[in-house]
Image 1 (cartoon, rainbow, N blue to C red):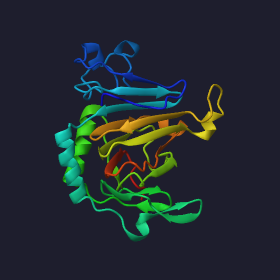
Image 2: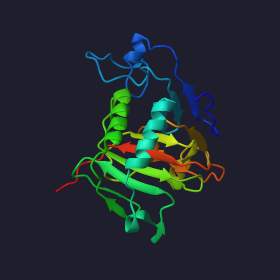
Image 3: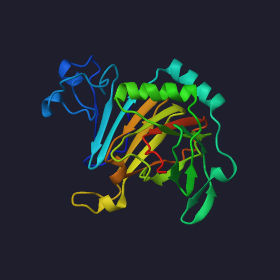
Image 4: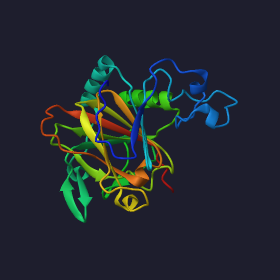
Length: 261
């Protein structure tokens, strides 16, 4: 995406990676994107570099650590979107409701979970067991792993029928998440604004400013890596955008701890 618009908070910056092929030093950089000279060199080849073959934008701030790229070209993204529309089975009935401040409400979007056997995931008063991986979800997961070097065993699928479907401010801090793990957010369909806002507890820290926000338009075929400690210090949301008339499907790949027996 050529234009990368955001409401920029003070102390938060976005850095665009070079479009040229990575140098040897960049290829040796770690998953956090820091230059190789700032860490010991790897003695053996690691996973595919964050930089390899893609143009990344790095979003950094006080407790904010995210990386953004276009992972799928339009033709491939269009094909994947059609497959998702045909294959994903979304929750109905009681599973399509969430608990907020002790009251149950209809979810303002459609949801589904897929992943490895034996996992459970609890959020908004629901405890969910994932369905087995669909081939299309496995392909997306494997592509994300190939460019990040990270593995995922669970995905939450959210479908927004138009700009009235949304998700409020929240943090992905459920106890089942592997400590320090990243969340990979892959988007298909309509471009929607994704908003980060500092968690109120973090706003009280020295040097922080109330109401800091960063707005990222998540494009068709894009990947946003939310790295540690982002979910400790920042909420995120997908606000209502009434002018958006087309659907969007978002996949958040996660690393979930196995259920204790």
